[in-house]
Image (cartoon, rainbow, N blue to C red; front, top):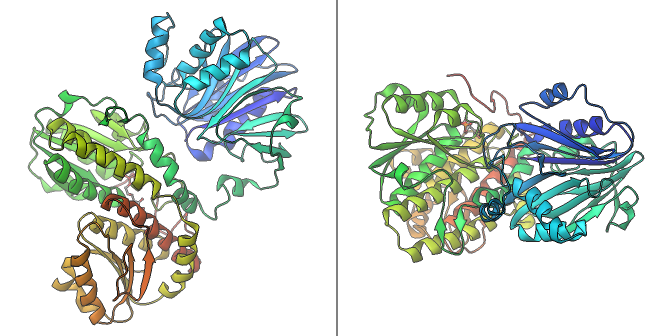
Length: 597
Ligand code: F6R
């Protein structure tokens, strides 16, 4: 996830900005940069890779006395992680840094190009700076020109801008992405999260959405709702949550909105996926989706969605199996690899094998400059931001959302769904994303309930259709962080063997969506209940044979129920693991990126 810092003051501006950027490293980034305006000189530096590269690059650059500065760590979403695409973006006399996405950047860019503006980068951000300088031609008041600029941009953003026209001030705008302004003894600080401010700012203002303004060194107390900042660094990085995993569960709603951004044309109710056009999918007769672990569970969901919506045959394969099995590989097959890290050795090798067999390749990945992205013909980025918790949560959510988008995109191309059906799926999608907002009451209920699920001889997670891979994922989450034995099963399969284990010490977590095969799964639950299994049902509807119920809100679609239940399962695993005293973020024996076979 991108990060922003800024400074107004007399101290070593470069040092303060670089320190701020280092404090943002925990969020993940692929390039960084800063711009300083001092004594009417605007200097900008950027580099790809670690902040250390930026430190090295600017080691001979110094400023004396008062100035203003802005800095940025970038996690690529629009355009590759190159120096040109890194922030700040500069015009003739101003520079800008930006978090978020400007959804209508393409149309703004075309308009500016027609006026003769030359664009260097592939980013959405660059439009802001040219638009601002263009607006200044007609509007002499820089704040009015800035307001006009921001009001032309649709989307989510936190923006800082400096300009020679007002060399002692920083312009700011916030909508949907966090932006904080702090005051300390040595000046005014800006940041996209608390951690760069800890130890420097004593008081802070958390800007509200819709705020646009300009600030000088004397103006801090004109800001609303100023409060003291007294938190430590580790608390700041976890944004107040106990674990990164918990923070990542809670940020899924925001992450999924970012995953969606620019990919749905609300006016035409069409899906557009950057870099993927009709010709890429032309002639494709079937698909193989290949991945490991949680990403494999997302692949399984993808199979149900693609077959159902785009009416295309989909094989799914665990990458470590695929590598050596010698499966038949058809040239008319599309090979999709799914990976959070983009570095998983088994998935990468499977992808290379597909390329050797001349298959078209598509990556669904979270890391833009990763090996899997570089190796693939095309990529759809999941845009989940860095995931610190070893147990994947928000990455899984974003993978499923991308697969849903891709299934609709393919259905659009193949005309297997009517326009009205696609429009309905889009409305379901927005509702499903909303359903990932964690409800405090639900979290408290699970906290209490989890006490009853700490012992016993194991867990079965059961579901049907897409709730079967979700059951597998729920079981994997619990295994990884609680070290309890848990298995996922298609609920109709229980009677073919696993039901032999049923007794009162066997816990069954039953996924019971109202919109998909409720009655079928209900009979499977009754079979287990008759054998004394302890059953916890997750459903919007009551299930009489369950010992415990976790209710999810009534939904419009099974996909909305899927995303609601996903959150419940993540929180359940989290709370059980915390009660057992485990380190949720660093479970034993596991690594975040598995780059060995
Ligand atoms: C589980 C988990 C792993 C990964 C798997 C693949 O919580 O994180 O199962 O999903 O190791 O990793 P990526 O997606 O990076 O290829």
